[in-house]
Image 1: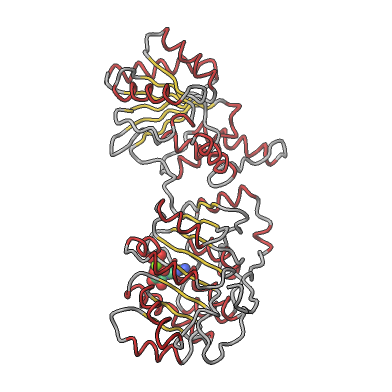
Image 2: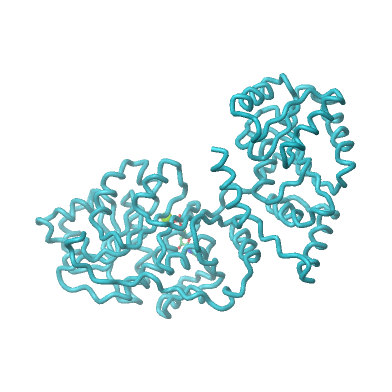
Length: 469
Ligand code: ADP
Ligand code: MG
């Protein structure tokens, strides 16, 4: 690449509309939550838009959208379009049918239109790779109304149909190629490279990336991409984002923004969620009641109790032992071997009650776990969802009881959110804490929590996770 003279080009077209600039961090979190729980990873991701008019798209594009009766951007579009329009490399994960195609097409058209027209012999500006012929055809069809309006040309290239026709199409010139990776390699090699080339490619789409790699296209994709200028813009869309794809994504996308829509973030319906406002000095008594009720009915049940600090774990352990409940504790202060043997005793039923801090109980999966008690209230939504999700696994039912004190009104905001999101009613005393807190924010006595889903809370949890690893 250092020997090729590439022309400079522009990737960033997005200007944040004033109405979005005014939005507070907490409002943005709330909006992402409403947009099917958008989760972001990576730095400086723009805020999601709510209307087509906020995307910075040209009038011709907007008018086609109107003709298609696309009322407003879907969730993935709302977040991916401003990110891609800002010139970022984007990984977009959202389920099938969520409108991913438009999410990469609209910014792509803007990107292409910014560049000088193709001269004869020049190859495409944009390369869309997808695993199957059907998908290629589908994307091609979605391009069509825009091509006319914007005066652009696309070629659809896939295996299993005569390469001659596709060669003829390409020779006429096209700004866009929609292709399967195998056929693209054939076309690049055809007529000793005179049919098409990658010199002008500045925008690459990997669509349905998970299937592409399931089908073994990784070597072809890598071969093609490595022949495209490194300062290109690359976007990857997929219905799922399995771990083994992460490594590859890191190779082809620099500093990406990762957008995940509808990630499992809500509490499963199998978990009955109870939230009680309790003062610190009555919590222990209430805990004994809960344990009494449970073990009267089911002596094989397991209980997991969450506290926020090591010292609290140890003192609660002493108090419960005194009351005749065999229990153990796990927390960051114990070594791994110790923790492992405790968890195995808990699983085997040697001890029915386990006291833990959030980090230590990460990933814990115990079938007989019937009751989770948040003895100390979790301080952000992700942590709440994680803790409560230790029960109600694999189709079993479970109960989660959370104690929250009046002083913890700040945390009530996230917990109420989690309840609403999983379709449960917010109990009146909890709602009152939320209202009280919001009043304080209005009066300037408190800062908005904004620790909810996807925001600082998530970052903190990620850091904790990394530490725990
Ligand atoms: P995915 O790639 O996520 O599986 P598609 O991009 O194929 O989903 O879109 C699914 C359907 O939704 C298509 O028929 C498309 O025309 C339609 N669609 C896309 N965006 C919108 C929108 N903003 N409003 C309404 N329909 C849309
Ligand atoms: Mg698709």
